[in-house]
Length: 407
Ligand SMILES: [Zn+2]
Image (cartoon, rainbow, N blue to C red; front, top):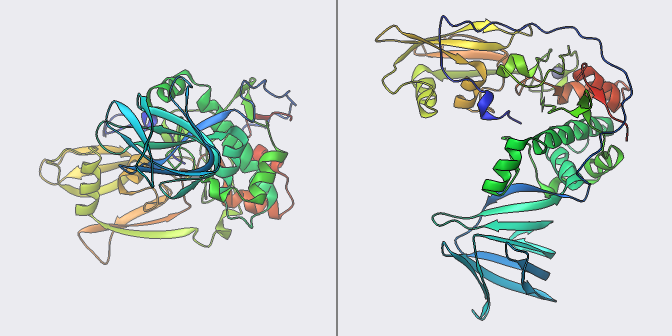
């Protein structure tokens, strides 16, 4: 999961103060708060982008219904049907796949549908859906998923299915709170209206795959249904990640903004078999990656790279990069560097960096952990669950400033 781009500060000239933010030791607030009245029922649909459609969309299903943007029924069939759909920039045309017979035409770029045994472009579709046509390029497939089914699909995609149930439950509450906080923000609602979906089904928002909402994920979502993390009664966007490497940092430290939910020390994350990592990259590769993301100007020639400020947990908050020609120095935030090199490549900002012994024109990163390091640490949560802790204790550990609502 990655935080929204607006918090990721771009280039900052060295000399500007990018202070390391300390981690405050805050006693957990153990007050029991009533459940937040939710405008969102478990059956209300969440829109999640699944991917791009083919030029000619193939739609297969039983009891298939298709509706136009105003809700008018275009197709309402019994039995198995197979249609071919195409969008010409103005209208959708729906034809019977086998005979080519015209079935319906719908003005506008959006279609919604439902049915059983659905396959769209041969992929199983386990919920209602929305198709968004594009004048140029391929359209978008949006899943319209009942909210708690979305939570189960997220946690089933995030965690290995043999992990303890209490980790799944803690993860369910974190994923639910993250989603609800987003969906209640006016800017996210405006964006959904404009583009047609709330969430990407990738690490940009939360991983989501309906096919992976296995039994344990569904059970965890059901047994914590409606439970969220709040502060002053408001649901909080609770970030989480794979492995904190020993200590978490708050969003304000990692991104320079966001909710304040506290930080935690962890002893269990080294159980992750890939807790430590190493990455060698040439200056040329790093420079190209930063230029590709427009973090560095095109004329820049990277000559050196060093960490200039760190969080209390040791994360690289800012990294100075120096131009070989002008000697000019830029500061790049640690998370921006991760974004440029790939979040799965530079796995965390908890690294040391030095000249590579193998390649003098490059550097070697040696690091710990995986992910931004803010909020719940999945490997640490697993360790806590294996030592007998329940999901509420796990949540209190990672979000000490927040409160857990009752069901
Ligand atoms: Zn951890």
